Image (cartoon, rainbow, N blue to C red; front, side, top):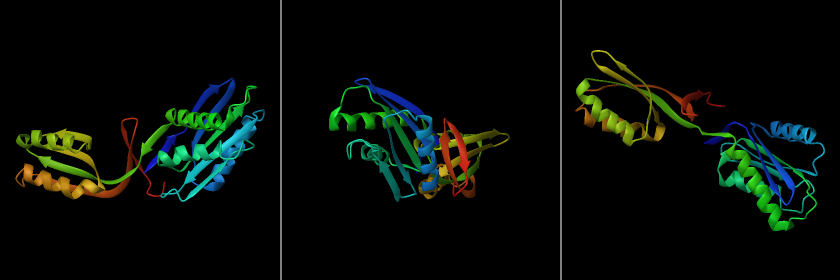
Length: 216
């Protein structure tokens, strides 16, 4: 599930109109509304404060506002970006400072979408997955085969411990657990020691593994 780990800001200028997008993770409609009001207060002199948010594991709650722009030219295009990117639990506010030149409906749609995309590009987006920690003990002869399998399946290595044997500690996504264990057993002729940990929710955050609470 893709979510925002750290929000960001982005700004674009179209025909002297400034569009400032601010992105923030939210977990409820109340949080989203509070954030929208916060941005309205911060950019109190903006001509328009348009917004869109998506909440829920299945994006079941979604809202958007044109805030005085022509209907379907601001909030809905912003929401479409969030839905297309399949991002959950996020709110975006785009504050517009009018530059004196009308953009037309098509120009507004493109500007609000571009501003939203710029805000997302400047945010830290992560993909939360369900998985389990896997510890594999093997002799040095089996190390190369296991490293090959890990690279092939694009798994995350948490640690490697070298003693008389080698111990590899990995994070394995739920959908790969059975197939990867089978590959390890076949590659080592059943000689590897395999130990699974508890199921967790995890994501890679700027190349580092982070574990989350299941309801976070």
